[in-house]
Image (cartoon, rainbow, N blue to C red; front, side, top):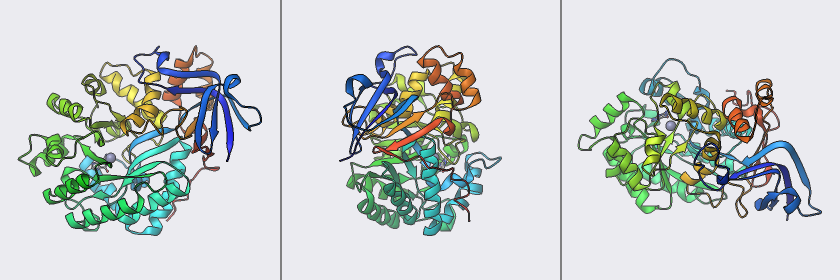
Length: 438
Ligand code: GUN
Ligand code: ZN
């Protein structure tokens, strides 16, 4: 049995805050402690009240301790193409994305990138992500092998794609089904791994492949499903032309039984009111990818309209179209996007979103996303004065809200002091630069 106490300024969420001052949504301990036994949280509270005598204490004061960040939509094979210039979605896929993903047929390349990928997530305080791997089963093996070796709770799956992509990236309806089924058997529920059925998007799947995906979903109703929806005008027109019988883009997925509480719909920007209603009605989750949507010029995600209907939305980096691996930066970009729509994303809600909010979207609040007793000890330790600009801002910060907002707008990996997964310190000792060399 291993047992430890982490001491610091401890913040966790009980529910979504209802505004900038809704501290009742949080557990907040100025001199707090998280008591961890065998990778699980035993208790969280005031240090004086809960820290048992005789157990080693790691003192992180004056830093903040929160639940580890969760990234609800990321592409494992796209780290190399972050910051590729000059294209919107369809050109960006053809020019940069597909060539990069082709290289993941090589298990050596996939394993090398997996090392860097998880280094970057952990440097940024991200302890759980839902990733699209490439079409190749080898990429999924590399992804889950490396995640498992580090003891991380990760979700992911091979993309299904049998048209409108280079030959080297195309599967078939049958191989998509067979490979996914084999990967589910190999990885789902192994350690902390969860397999996600991942039809890339309607454009790269024939109706026959959508039927294969539907059969997979029916055979594995406990699994998540992830795809892309209504990101870009040209994409929407192409998808609707390929499925003329559908009422709209969302309806394509609806017809193949892909909408439900386990469904993650990346982007979901250009939606009709009827589509928003349908997302809420089915319990599916739109996933906001703010830095990606700005980078590709895709549009502005309207979280307020979905929330008003009772839909719970995720938030994500969408690396490699995303501009940052940091969920802090991502929350900051969501703030700026909301500003353009005359809404205010308050800092408590921003921190709730990248922790408990995304855990809610994944249906995993019983395991991750909070510091509640009985959950897995995935945590991040944040230094609100980590950089000169943060330190300067903090000289004028009045309260926790100001501090969290400073982290959301100015913070990134440099603010991450330590990352814990299952109670183990897992932040890479040195930056991963160059590890992904050819
Ligand atoms: N739509 C289909 N595939 C992708 C992808 O890899 N990235 C983004 N941003 N959108 C997509
Ligand atoms: Zn994506």
